[in-house]
Every structure is written in C-alpha cells, then in structure tokens.
Length: 71
Image (cartoon, rainbow, N blue to C red; front, top):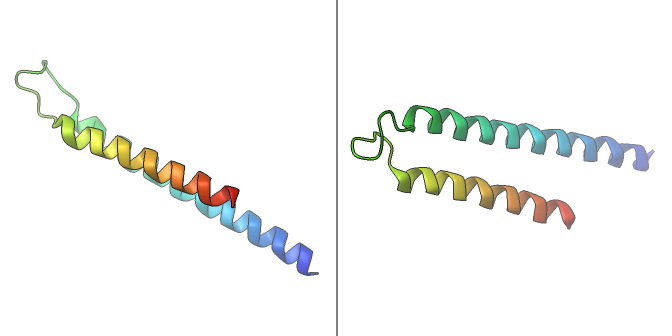
C-alpha cells in the first residue's frame, strides 16, 4: 500500500511541476510578445534588459526544477 501511495504522490508532484513549467512558459511568452520591436532598434518599445532577465529567470527556474528532481 505505501508503494502505491508513493507512486500517486510522485505522479501528482510531476503533474504539478509540469503545470508550473507550462504556466511559467506561457507567462514569459505573454510578456515577451507585446514587447517585441515593431520597426527596429531605434524606436523599439522593448527593453532588452527586461527580456534578458525574463529569459534568464526562466532558465534558472528550469535548472532549479531539474536539479531538485534529480535529488
């Protein structure tokens, strides 16, 4: 019985992680799409520093999730 409980708990945790990763990806995508440049770099509405921070944060989050999953 405890083995089956652990199996269901593992599946629930993996489903939660997958859901959180998908939500984080969609959030980054939703933020990045309106920020894309319209006519070039001169009058670009985007702030490259913010975009790089979002992408770097998403990478750090993904690396942390993968590292914690391997433990």
